[in-house]
Length: 207
Image 1 (cartoon, rainbow, N blue to C red):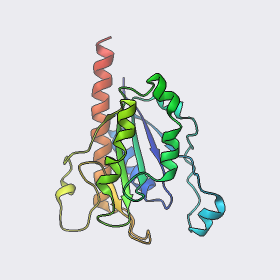
Image 2 (cartoon, rainbow, N blue to C red):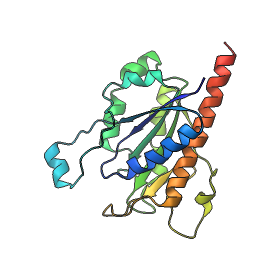
Image 3 (cartoon, rainbow, N blue to C red):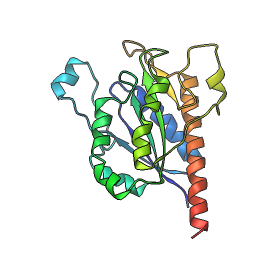
């Protein structure tokens, strides 16, 4: 029985969506079953227009957090906002009170990937400041670790850390994820999927 993983993202300018495509590739390579969702937008259309944000992707918007109960794990992707989750993601997290009361997400797994405007703009702190949400739900955080050689490659600026895959988007968002960053994302999908698959297989055998 393969693990069921929800790939839940917020992407305003497409950088996270590109990373998520590679994450999904890695998850599927691990044998996991993947469902793609995006966090609901909280900004008004006229605000997004002024920000020159492109139209949203056709990925299903997840408005009901209880859907997450159906999955063994989640890979959460979103850009940093001052070193933490953006408001769109925080708003969704605040909607999970009912799940917290019932322990609906207890014992599930989660990983995080992100994007930043600069090399030192929050690759690690964005994951770090999301962990309290996971801890309160009893969700097990699965870091990437230094499991991919690109994480120690200093020949060029490359996103990614022990906390998870990431990309440096640039101050104006013009820098797209590089081949090395996408390779790290594939690696995170593979490693996360393998860990959750192993747990699901063990849990099934012990029944």
